[in-house]
Image 1 (cartoon, rainbow, N blue to C red):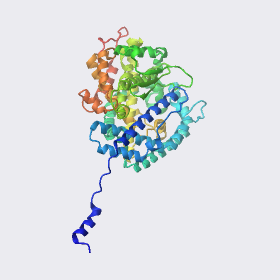
Image 2: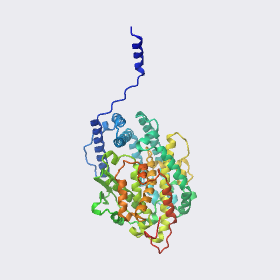
Image 3: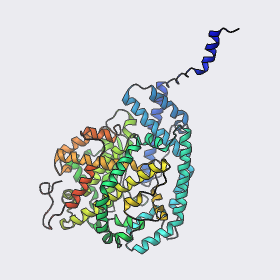
Image 4: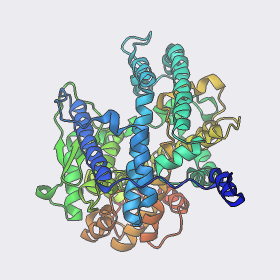
Length: 526
């Protein structure tokens, strides 16, 4: 017969807390880190070769089925809980997010392939696909013809919309099996910050820019698209932001020289340029500029196929900003160099793309016609507003959908258009499964604060002062280890606030030199 005390002990066994799983061995975690670094490098190198039109070479890759699996994800979770050092734990967190996102992508690969095929399937219009639709709309001057192109794409846009819905539903199911009970929880993990805070930022951006956006839309719509603002449709927006009237001021033949002059002004001589640049106009090359950090900081690659025009310059300068960031990264852990809050890298890229908004840089580096600067600045301000407002709307739509809130799309407000539901199908061309728009929105806001600091340090022509290089290196060196909020703290700034961005756009609108006044570092202040 079991005594009373023994019986109580036996009955209580089931109520005792289970011991926490033992932390994984350091050698096991180190092996995962090595395999992930090898995968990232090989994956980016393969993407580079495809981008420039070369057949990808066979590579020795780790056994990725094991690497990107729930078991390996669990190993990193246990390692994070057991790691006492904050920086080491942060690196594990970034690596864990990589494994989760790649696992999710592989689980929805069939639907991604269906989306890929739909984007490249010929439309009834000769030579047109969903992939080339936006470019075709930007190039088409006739409003009626633009609407015909969209009508031709309607059936495939509807198919793409359904595929995107299926993909999101499958992502939700797979994420739930990994322990993510809501999309917001998953997105915060993958973005490396709480996306609910970005919802507030998005609402503020729309509130603070509604009036100036409406003003510019009314002013420029007819000139740029052939339609007054009250009759604009989504089919007209690519034309609105194409900047065709200013193409001659941005010759493709000058793109590389202008960039080299700018970097030299910062104190980066061409012989110390830290990236491999492929600018060959080969037939099979993707025409868009792109940066490929194959191995940070030693192997950074840039691709460009200069064609000219403001978009060509903007995209290349943006990618140059990414290349400079990664080439000057000095973090010890690979996960802190390549993984983390992408808002930081986007901000550092937007700083260089923003040279296209600087009348001094435009005049000194491109001999941009002074008489054209006021109208160009207003068009460029409208373009920037449309892009940042679009990101804000995508954030709000995504967060509300994740909370099962059935509300009208904020894209209608962001674009300033009253649209039927079917017209919003065009937005599915850039569907984002993991709320990537939040990175771009935060990047725009942080970039404006960085520009304020650069001008405070080096004056209005920050891009011609080596002192700016010192300041930029303080931000570059951290790779993606720091969040956008931590980068703001480096400048003594408050949490992300769009005030600096609003002021930057306002400065573009009030700039109006006489036709004989060339903008100089002394004559134009911001």
